[in-house]
Length: 349
Image 1 (cartoon, rainbow, N blue to C red):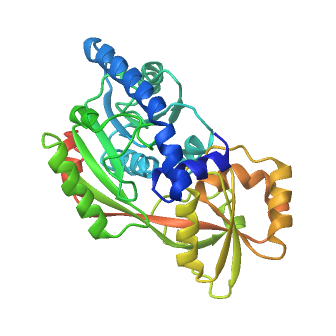
Image 2: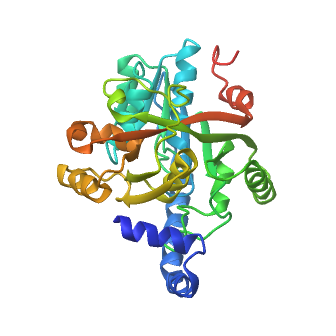
């Protein structure tokens, strides 16, 4: 899916497409029925198929129902770091779609090994061979071949819930799939606490058997000079970001699932005019892309996300003045409840 189609899909999914968006949504209904039927058959098959247990490995899955941008990657990193701080030997298992998220994990938690493997069972076995005793799956809810001890699902307060399935809406699976989760974590970036609480209430009403355990706020805290990130181990929640007071106009260059959210967050930090140059999620930037971005930006600074920055370091000479927007992961509520749910000896204080 290219960036233009992604933006159109997000507008249609959010109900911002007007009459044309409503018509397109109606036309997509048959495709949604096909997707729903395929997912029903898949889940019935997996319900009858025992998952593969990786001996010696405690498995925590962090996943979601909606495509892209719910905050599962920073939550995965937080969990891996918590396990390490409490004396465990964690590893992160990633499915390998795009190199940006594995690189982020390596930057945020440099002492935690990251195993990139489409087959999560094989990734888990490699983790055990390496010496890990806890595996945290990044985006693991739909990867059901590997047995897990804890299944966490992240729902974004910015998404309408409940909502249509792909391609008519952002959801990979129907609401009923949440019944197989152990707990739900609400995340919010641009949404307020009231929106997060309202989502929690809707989930509790629709899926009463699955607890809504916590709410995480991913808040933009400032901008960090791009050059200072080279070789640095910057983790979520870093306090080293600054709020430049002299930036009147900037251009956002990004390849994430929700570029509009990035645009809003940069606008909150900068306070001036912000334009957007967006590529499809996980896009691999070329030198030509960077030169084009610099030409479009002119003398304006460019702002990128941490997810973009790990892929752009090799083009630092072409970027010119560039900043990376930083975010802080904080728990609005439920942090200790998440720790308690994991039931890993020595994890929770």
